[in-house]
Image (tube, rainbow, N blue to C red):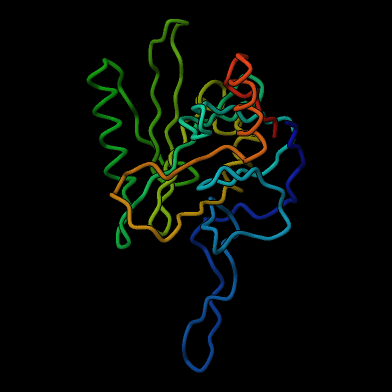
Length: 224
């Protein structure tokens, strides 16, 4: 399924910056955050997005959305690909009061250390992030871990390829992350539990038909 459109240009200010307005002696927030990932309550209108349930991915030209899903259409993995770079996305439940990226980041660092890879913490566009070089069957691979805490959710992104070593090379992948929308829902969930992701109904039905006919059940790439 082709899902392609350039997003309208917008500011790249910090996602928490808002323009307060003073009304009767009180500060009133009157503007939406100019940069995502957005909570669904704050998401800008008029943007074409691929709805995967808890995540809505903006359509950006030349970005391919690859998903791994079970026969029921439940998604286990979402990876965005542009050229030689990729961005793996995950979204998780978080407590109402505090973010969890600081804690998760430290656990990622420790896991990498246990696997023999040193991770460097640097200050990136989204705050503290980790950069590491790991050994894979294809050789050494650069990884860049970013996290964004939202209202009762956290988005984790893992850049690979050129976008991992040089954030300026992320290009359209960064545009997707900036335009991402999270629909957390109101249901109580354990902290860190992955939020549910599902294929769009028409894609899930197509995959089910292929499975029933004995064809490979995994849907093809969804290009965004």
